[in-house]
Each structure stands twice: as C-alpha cells, then as structure tokens.
Image 1 (spheres, helix red, strand yellow):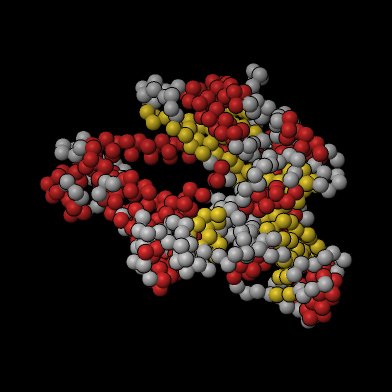
Image 2 (cartoon, helix red, strand yellow):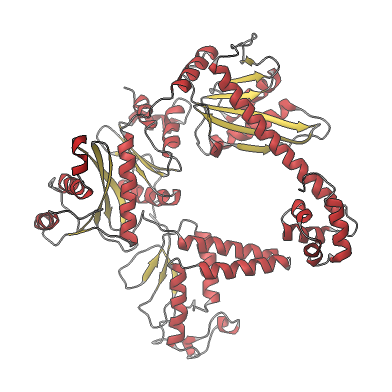
Length: 615
C-alpha cells in the first residue's frame, strides 16, 4: 500500500480534536512533528494535497510508514507539546531553531526578602515559583506590567536588603513603587502585595478582572479609547493566568501517566511519558476480556493488568507512576520496580491538582487510541449519494466534503458572498465563511466578478494556511459564475479541485469544458446533495446581506438626526452597541448619554423607532 493510501485508511479514525501528530519512517524514526486544531482535518490534508503540494511535502509523504497522534485539551497545549517533541526528536522535516528557546514563564523569587516578578525562559531549581508557559507573550507581558503597577512591585534588580541604592528611583516618584530599597516600605507589607500577585498568577483573577472591566468601561465612557484598548489587552493576559496547561509540568520531574478507556470486552491503556517535566510521547496497550465477565472486572483490575503489561517489559522505570485507581498488587509492583530502578518508585492515584490533570489527559488519549482502531460506521444514504454524484460528474472518487459559494446583492448594494461546507450531507458550520465584496459598484451588480473575488480570497487563505480542501466545489449560478470561480481557483493554485455550477432555473449541473449540462433525476440523491449545499449557501448569503442593509439604514438615519454629530453618534453606539440598541433604549437612558439631553433623545427615538429592524 502506498504511503498516502496508508494514511487515508487511518484518517477517518482520527478525532476532530486538538493534538499533535508524528510521522515516522520504516525504521521508526520521527520524520515530522506537527500540531493540529483538528487532527482529522490536518492529517487528511497530506493525503488530499500530496500530488499538488510542495516538493518538500511530497518527499515527506513518500517516506511516511507510521503515524502517532496525541490528543490535547486545547490547541495551545498542542502548540506546547509540539515544541517539546521537536526539541526531543529533532525531525528532519521540521524547522529547528538553533537557539532552542522555550515558551516564557513568569518567575517570582519568593526565596528573597523582597521578591521580584520576572519573565524567564529557563526553569531552575532555585526555590522560585514559576507560572506558565505562555504562548501569547504580548498579552502576558501587558498583564504583568499592570500587576506590577497595581501592587507597586519593584522592577529593579537590587539584592535587597543586602545591596541597596542611596535614594529611590523614578518609579517611586510616579507611584509605581513604594521604595522598599530605602526603607519606605517594610517587608511585611511588601510580602502582602506579593501574595496578591501570586494569587492572580495562580488563577484567582475574578475580583481583579471585575475591577479592570469597570475601569475599561469608564475609560470608554470618557471616550478614552486608547486606555480602554490597553485594559482590554490586560484582560486577555489575565485570562491566560487562569488556563491550566498539562503539556508541561513546571515542577519538572520524570513520571509515567496511565490512562484507561473500556468498551464492551476491550479496554485500551495509554502510558504517557513525561521526562524533565515535558510530555514526550505515549505507548498503547489493548486489553481483551470476556464480555460475560465485564461485571466482575472493575477499574482496579484493568489498571493492574495495564501496569503489569507496561512496566514489566524490562525498561528502566521513572521515579513516579500515576494511575487512575489503586489496585491490590500495588505494593508488590512498587517493590519490583524499585529493585529494577535501583531507587524508590512511587505509584500514586492523585485526585486533584496538576497530576490529576495529567491523568485526565492520559484518559482522553486512551479513548482516542481505542477509537482509532474502530472504523466509523458509514451512513448508507450518504455513501449512495456520494457514489452517484461521483459517477454523474466523472469524479475520481466519491466526494465527502462539498463547498458551495453564493453571491447576494440588491441592485449592487451591500454585495456579499458566502461559502458553506457540508460533510456527508451535514453542515460543518465551523467552516462557514462570509465576505463583503470589495470591488462591487452600487447600481452596477456584477455577479461573476463578485464570485471571482470571493472564491479567490477564500482559496488564497486556505492555501496560505495549508488548511483542508474540499472534494468538490459548487457555485450557485450559470456559466459566468462557473468561469469566474475556475479562474480564481487557478490563480490560487487549486485548479486541480473539481468544480461545478448548479443553475437554478432547471437545476442543471454545469461543468468546465463541457457544453451540455448534466441533468439529474429529480429524485436522485446526488441532486439532493447539491441542492442542499446550494440552498444553505444562499440562505447564509441572503442573511448577511439583510443584516448589512439594516445596519447601514439605521446608521445613516442616526447620523442624519439634527444635532447628532460624529462624537455624539460614537457615544451612543458605544453606550448601546448599535442603532437598534439605541432604538430599544428608554428615553431617559438615551438622554443620560453625555451631550444628548431629553429633547435630542426624544428626536432620536422618534426617528429610529419608525424604521424596520429595530424591534
């Protein structure tokens, strides 16, 4: 079986969840490590684009003999895990950074009398407390600067109190530090401030977030949008402090983590290998037992069998093993492992904290590994529709993913486009996209030109992001729209994708280079598939067009009210969110906006409430 065919056979068993994938060659060496927002879509892109991809990608696909995947809770965890695995394996198809920098941490030097709060990329056993790692470095730094100002934490590098300056620095004079360096702040009050910072870094941000949100609203009400934007970024940084990351354990250490998933008479166990605080890989073991004895096999029995299967293979065990449940032979196995290692081995079943989150990650990977060996049941109706569509249009393979484009306009005003995606006849709304057509001229509608712009913008971005591509592209319209779409696809480098048009009048399917249309029977499930995706694209485009026209009408009405200039219009929109929000407000609320007053408020509401779309 060619490498691409081997990958294709495994793609459907992959989950639509974030994670990391490793491609291995025939010798078992890692060729490439990548992260994915959805493992199924990302890995399938290597199969679907192997012929049209870059030379580097084609060479990679030719050498792939094995695939390993590790699921994570979030895409951010996948990013961290990818960095760990690239540093560990140095795959030849990955770009390697020579300085080998890691993601940054926040370090609090709690062992000092007057602790400092720093950003570092190195984890050291120096008694300090570390928080992180952080992938959004900019948001983290803004939030950290805010904490230092709010709690007046020193930013200097003096080794207090052993070495100190003669007089306080500028931070003291602008109220950003209380000058513990010259004795103006005692150690107890400074420690209290550090405790507040530690609580926030540890995830207790609720009170501070509410305070920042109030300050942001007040700044926006004063029309101080620069300060409001800065506080918005601070909120993003505070949110990163509350996130839990299991891809890296900031406390370091070597441990194995056991996850378990059972269904029927089969269970799957996964052993995650954590070394130096970094998650570096996994091992998988399947356990089979008689379904009749399912009631007699509890979790402890399966955990015991899995532990014996993993750790009694002669490999050097780590100092710690995390398991989801204790089992009867735990003391005996602990002694056996200790003798093998030449040192103490702990077997723990944690119920909370970072170690418990590692167990939860292992359990998710066990469920993923279990289902990877199970073929998803095919939907007979979808399979038949896909097969008939491939025969009717002369496609190389039955399509699963259909993408349809539609244009909506009213006399050239607010021209918009939509792209909707159906997989096996079902909408995938995460892949829906909508566009405002930039080149449209009011009063001069040009659907083919709009179609060319929308299709071109869509595929240029998909190619740039190396995202999953559809099996069939459909456009709503006739020959003009079909030709425009095909030209745009050629410009984006995806001319190999099949494309067709569905003409509304007779429901005929038009194909490039073919004069006669394809006419499908009205009851043909292949036609029903095309109609479904076409109608969904039309609905999505028309809804967007109506939304924009309503907003434009209301906004223009608001700006034309005598006495409402740009500043007052901006203040109203900021207070109520939209012209429709203004129309729904009470007269007293509108009058309370700075610069409005009762008379102008009554005039504004009289006009807006007489217009459609304000209910």
